[in-house]
Length: 446
Image 1 (cartoon, one colour):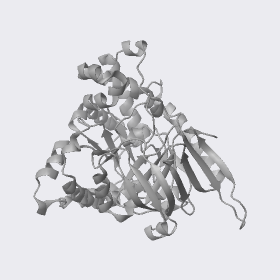
Image 2 (cartoon, rainbow, N blue to C red):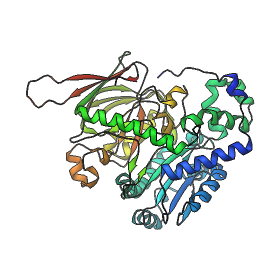
Image 3 (cartoon, helix red, strand yellow):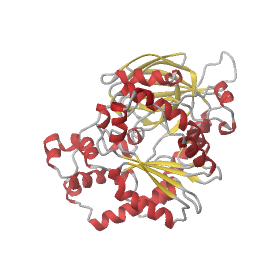
Image 4 (cartoon, one colour):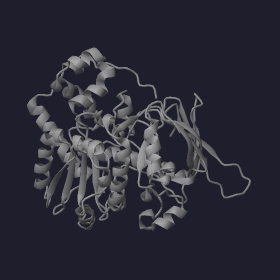
């Protein structure tokens, strides 16, 4: 995807969030995460994962959560240096050995329907460039195996969850460098960097609305309309083509696949937003029926480090050939964890009306970049976009084509020249399938 270099207007550059305005903004954002994100209810407990640099905002979240009736609010420290030092210095015999209480914690979260919040935006986006990824692969495999029941419970709606961004100076510096230039960005103070990043994030998070909660409900309704239309088509497969010829991919949907987007529903029918922001509509591909090649158009973080210009070739659903301009070795390690990580678990559509796309920036964040671009996910499938999928057992889901894996990573494949043609199911043999272009030049055609 071509990211155009843009400069903020002088009007926007002159605007500044005063301390009082920033405080009100963060109050509004915390309320959005708690009410629309995890949709906390009285008596529910919450776990909040974040880095130390996020603590001023975490304090606001904790206070607001208790005011809304939370039973317990537990902040969980995600310390990047601790994780990196583990990969570099932990003795081999201890790698991947989790404390025995980890399983008890996972069981408690599930049994008591805890809500989970993750705040993203690293203190240093390049932390993991020094990690020992051989050791990290061992650590991540054991962690994902232990956490899998919680992932499955979350997908079913037993535990509401949301992931939301929070700006940090070094993250802002990396993202905004193309906009301001390396020389100018290097001279900006931490406060200036945060100010400028908030100017980008506020409209993306719809915090520029008087009532962000209402704005997100309206946006969710828009996504639901797209979902309804796509479900009405009864699509058999999608054909992705780019003018460059680097993408020529056919993705068949799983048996009884449906489309999803916008709010999820919890076990008690409460709506919640797993991602803030979200711009996607998505479905479940058939794990054995993807054919062709695809070029990844945005950098992707895998195990904390960056993969650039990845390329995949599929046959019978499986990645049979792949490359990357930077960090192909990370893909080697990704696929070594789980053979099923070579198969698709998600197909998602995002067009260029997305405010994240319109920012014309690379965000160095899957949360944001996946909502600026069409994407596919290698790894675990999503049962909620199979009819009655959350009620089916794993073997039944597999029979329908839903992939089962320890991993799930989004790879962005959208571009300004992307064309997607939907091929509609037909009940009659030898009858040509109806074709319908649903995206042209990166924009929805419906």
